[in-house]
Length: 289
Image: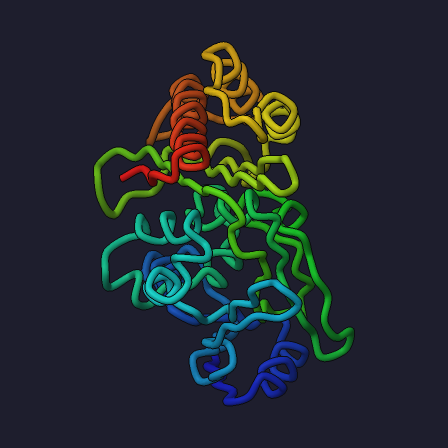
């Protein structure tokens, strides 16, 4: 196995173009596990840790642009006030050591259905910035990025450079069910983002289908049902229906972490709970603890 360590983004793109079989590595929290267990044996590793710009973030045209090398820990500390849903999800990732190494860019590259960052990115209408030496930059909506179990929309010569998303304009929440309280792969997860200015809601469902996905029918239902101007309490029937629509958006399986039936039940519960937290914050200003 070859080890490639470019020091500039241009060199990284050239290396990937020359060696499409090269597997990018940043924090290594997913890749090294697969290598240690002999689940993957790429022809080369493409180490991106020396490329400084991947660890930067900024604002352009009212949106946040976050480099693929920004760690979960930095995302929480430096961007948590503007991306609360993604920050909540980031806090649930592994241990402090993992959060200091792991990145959202790596989570996207791994494309696991259980990736913790994926539901908030979907709920927030994020876009993934990818690039190749030959074709240049293209933007992929998060909703189109995941194509199958651990598969994404990247071409063989492309690398993830950053992701883009608007700062939160309303409450955002993330909920996750696991087999224990810490350092756990999600049995299922759910994210919600309210956008009062647009009178709509975004959602993201994780670990309950071959790919992370939005619950589009649930979003459309909620956007029409909520009292955006008056802030009236959400009727129990509305919350119940929202949970059912989220459950219907899933396509879970039975595995060692949980049954399909349990995942569907848990998603409906999490959808109702996160909706209650988000609406309470929207109408009272109190954040759920």
